[in-house]
Length: 231
Image 1 (tube, rainbow, N blue to C red):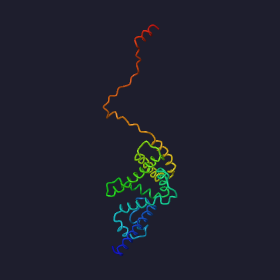
Image 2 (cartoon, rainbow, N blue to C red):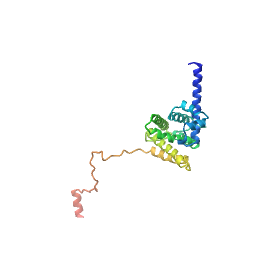
Image 3 (tube, rainbow, N blue to C red):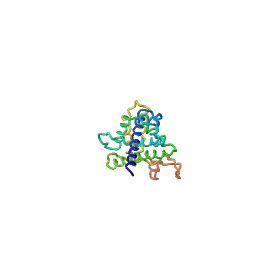
Image 4 (cartoon, helix red, strand yellow):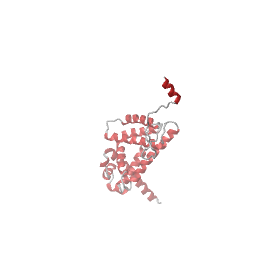
């Protein structure tokens, strides 16, 4: 590769980074459904054709923007989380300070549930995040930081449900203190994790015959009956 090609490639990468940063800023300034290539171009102070040349499809730009934005999370944390539950809480606190990302995450869920070419890519990122939390929880369980009678992947599913539910609450009910609600809900989660699940007996699938319980009958021996009669 010639020096000219290298310089052109670096220019293209620099342009892509500028566009992505413009997209992040656009999503911070505008609702999710109002951001398009023209808005990103205006925010990044670039010609529209430059944005469309680097990112020919909107889903491609959204995917790269999503990845870049998620990578930036936590880069300014002054201390490391002590456990996975604290890690998620720190992330939720960052969401409160940066609701534009939450709007993007909520919008991406719709794409992930659709039958499009990019849906699988977004679903994979969702699965990867759940797997990351499951691995973190397993480390916490092994180190006795958390106690659980259920597998780490089940605990991670519940933790993600709590986290993303509060993200939605933050958007539609902004008067709620989601960090306070997170702390309350986590206490309930932790208690639930420690309870051993009792397998349910599905009577419809069982071939066993259920016999109704009857009151116990006292059986007297013959000597006892004689003694009772004599009395």
